[in-house]
Image 1: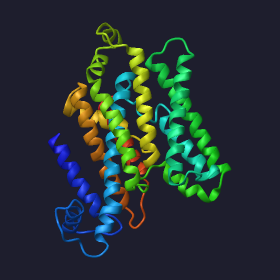
Image 2 (image 1 turned 90 degrees about the vertical axis):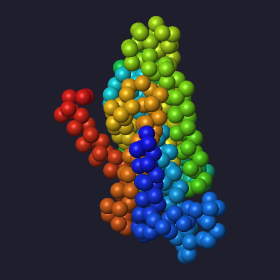
Image 3 (image 1 turned 135 degrees about the horizontal axis):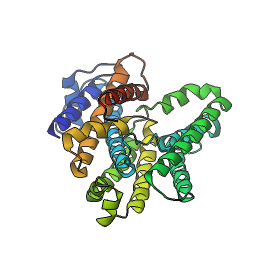
Image 4 (image 1 turned 45 degrees about the vertical axis):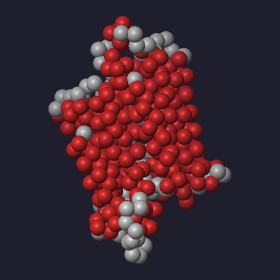
Length: 328
């Protein structure tokens, strides 16, 4: 945990310093010190404004989104007993993407700067509602049915997204592509609170119920015998994960594989019990997204790669490595 906290601090400073324009670390520290009132002398030129108004919100957004997606992955993998569970698998990200793309290509920004977040949030929650409706209509409500329903909804919303891209305004194709691959370019002080809310919801829920999630490790029958309402707990966890994912996707786009990788990376460090596992997943989820965003901004300067390209590449390499180690 101490190493993770040090990594977050170091990567946060590097994330603020590096970009299309490299800012010396001394100026970064000076601008941050002036912003919090520890230094009365402002940094000369536009450096202070770049640090405080542009790069600091982006860094905080990366921390919030990475932490939230990491915890979502832990909880979904626990309640479904599936090592590959993440928001992608259950259609949550696909629903949010379809909502955002419908605004970009068809409906327009009727609610101003909040149109895209509202549409993405609505799409994500609609996808979650459809998944739960499908599960409620079939006999039995085990984790495998939740996964199958999630896959079906994911394919449906992916098809809808592709249709909207081709049927809508072609001039918006680049915006759609960038948003569906994820990015932190929408980071503003106005929406940092929204991302922090999404991360706080899933983190607080996970920590509050950590002993109940521990019971899942012994199997559903053992959890029921310990007084855990397994089916209700699974549905509630799915809804809370859907809510948090919809909020995070609404401000950062679709960022894949964070929720899949982080739990596997943290279990050898924190152990299987959820109090430490959830805390470490939040921490190292932030580390992963900070590092990925730094790479996305520095690999092809002055262009910025969608962050989903970085996380998907890392995720593919991670899954192949796990396969060769016979851990999946």
